Length: 242
Image (cartoon, rainbow, N blue to C red):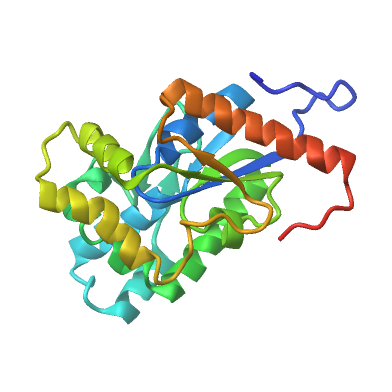
């Protein structure tokens, strides 16, 4: 399944919303980007939004004030690329694409992500972006259950804790110590799970376990699950979504 077929009557590509959820180190971002390319779709990294808020709150010194974090989120001038071939995050006039991946931001992003009022604000932005683009692959925690429960395809991408830790280590160039790495993977999962369940697929959400799969095989497995769910909707258009 590659590219997007154009509707000959309208000259437009059909709407398609794919939601990909899962724990840290499961490969959500890299796999979702490639799936978006293959489907001719936009790509939304919702985690980058939480990281951008965390970075901004660090810079302004309000990270320890929950109410101030909410206010900062509400007023944040945030621009996020949805091109799967162009990663770009801008706050105001600052390009923070690289800065939000710094361990200093990673270590505090859960302060933002576990603030329920912040989540409500960012979920509203995420839904608006999904509606605006129409054909999009959106990834992040709670995408399948809260942000886009009516997505055309909903997938939980997971892997064993050992596989996820190894992948995150490789992603960081093997430059992070074992304790810090464990905090970035298992520690963040534990903190974030207090506000959202991203470890077990909800009803109607397909499970893709990539523990024994390489990158290409994982992409193919996700594409196959998208096709399966689309086919199910075609044969059962009255089927209920969870």
